[in-house]
Length: 271
Ligand code: NAI
Ligand code: 15L
Image (tube, rainbow, N blue to C red; front, side):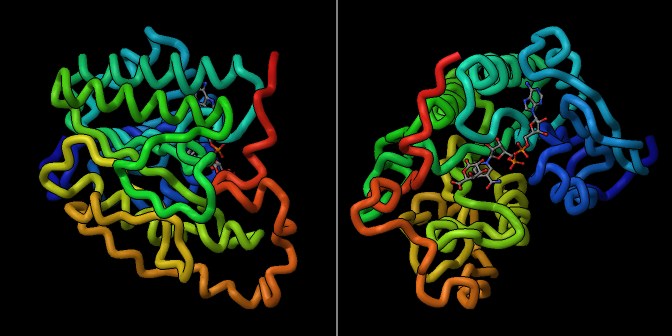
């Protein structure tokens, strides 16, 4: 391969066919000579500067191969909501363990792990959280994100493999509920937070909240300030969609009382 000035030789993006993966595929090409895209399927043709490797996160041997030659990982693959236990177990528990085992063996320097606000969803909406607040998952999906955060902590302590865990709020084209207005992460800010997470010289094991510059927030990113992340977008851009907060649940609805919103009563879903 010819010499290039791009910062990384090869970045792996898992979950590349998912909602956020498709956004990132369009926007991270400048960061690496090669972006290796992975998912279960649905990635179409590789474009210049891309490689496509289909792989189930729960397949240990396939994961050991997937990580070969990779310098850094954006881990966006896996189950992204509260579903039955077995898919959560396979993708988010076994899969994350396979990822870290393979990454450490391949000499990967850094992983950005797409965690979720559901790792802390059983905190009341009256509580302000930072990186040191205790986790309070709001379902088995949230428990699986706590597992990923803790596994990555172990790989930092044991092997010096760095991770930034991003507790993403709500990253879609626009907020759909008033709760989303509080937790909104604009795609532009997601990409900026990933750029900061990959290019800050030392991150160790960092917990950051994935949110834009929204008017109301439950989260404080001061303990991730070394990342230098400055959100430039805000859910204020969508305030006209919620003139009287009409969609927000009634005062005594549990979904209003806890940060995880409706997730708190969804699980557990037994197989
Ligand atoms: P998504 O569900 O659209 O994408 C996830 C992708 O992972 C899918 O393409 C799916 O095929 C793949 N996947 C699932 N199981 C797999 C397996 N066993 N092996 C390989 N690939 C598998 O989710 P989205 O919205 O793109 O989210 C990406 C990540 O960010 C997820 O980890 C999610 O938990 C996290 N996140 C996203 C939020 C958002 O607002 N979009 C909020 C909080 C967290
Ligand atoms: C998540 O963790 C999900 O991945 C995303 O689809 C949304 O449901 C988001 O949380 C949320 O809290 O709304």
